[in-house]
Length: 251
Ligand SMILES: NC(=O)c1ccc[n+]([C@@H]2O[C@H](COP(=O)([O-])OP(=O)(O)OC[C@H]3O[C@@H](n4cnc5c(N)ncnc54)[C@H](OP(=O)(O)O)[C@@H]3O)[C@@H](O)[C@H]2O)c1
Image (tube, rainbow, N blue to C red; front, side):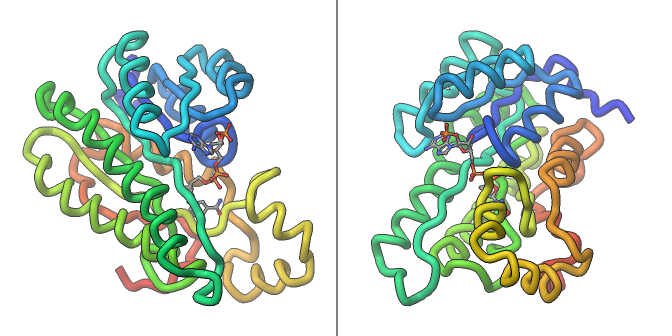
């Protein structure tokens, strides 16, 4: 299937490792011109070169970092037509270590960053009559589980997606949430947890993962690439689980 996004300008946040890198690679493989954003200059340059795209070294938790990401992409590649809000932040682990500070950090690092980035590109998408916005949420956003502050912030992102999608639907712009289950990649959070507690994580996989294994970054990225395609024009306001059945939500 030709996704029809050849030459489209795509911006992916937090895209030098893990899920974000795989999404940037999947979009580039479809012919999109991809800008990747992260804080470490060396990594950003390496990934941008490998994708023949653009690298923006910026901290997306800052107002300036978000603005610069969008402006540099627009100056170098053209207006952003596809935005993947992949950046997410964790704060606290349980209600024992979660208070206002952790809740604020989780909302700032998920909801606020995704909303700010989206609001920077949405008017242009609406004006041009085409656009794709994807927010990477989590199985722990579609249902209870995980760290409470992260859970609440990812649930809020799913709500944000739905309300924004309805506003811009008639303008050719889709807004969707993709909710990964537990995804293992070398150097990532689950990799570190498995190294620290191999038996505990083996139990977790047996109990929580119906496939008997973690998900891979490519399995998430392939779904995101489809959501960004021309063919996915009827998919908007959705919260799409990519979790191998890990989630227990009926919707
Ligand atoms: N992994 C999972 O199992 C899982 C499951 C469900 C949902 N998710 C969600 O999926 C998304 C990606 O998670 P992930 O585990 O693949 O990767 P991650 O470890 O959350 O992110 C790594 C990437 O983020 C960049 N980054 C970190 N802080 C940044 C900042 N302030 N500004 C810009 N870039 C920044 C890193 O580069 P620098 O350090 O150089 O900045 C790197 O490219 C998140 O929204 C996460 O909540 C993950």
